[in-house]
Length: 95
Image (tube, rainbow, N blue to C red; front, side, top):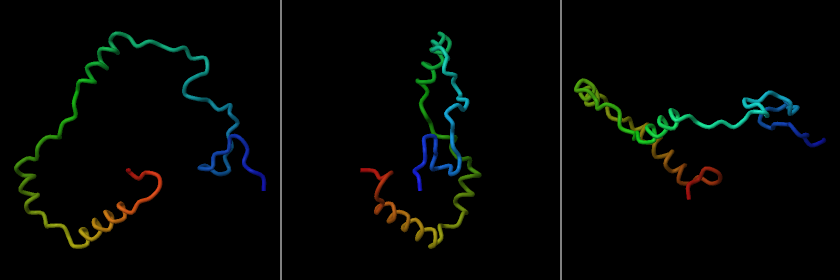
C-alpha cells in the first residue's frame, strides 16, 4: 500500500486536492488599510462590555418556582459527566 500523496485530506477520504482550487483571497490581492470610519467603529466596539441578558420577568420567576426539581436520573448523569471530565486525558485537558 502506498502512502497518500500531497493534497490528501484524511478527514475527507477519497478526495484529493490539486492545489489549484479557488481560494477566498486571490494570490494577487493587495493589502488594504482600514478607513478612519472603520477604526472608529472598531475602537467603539472594543469599549463594549458583555452584560447579562434581561432579568427574568415575574411570570418567568413564578414558572421557575413551579417547575419540578431535577430528577435523580439527571443528578446521576451530572455526577457521571463530572467524574468522566476529572479523568480526562489527552488533548483538550486543562492543566
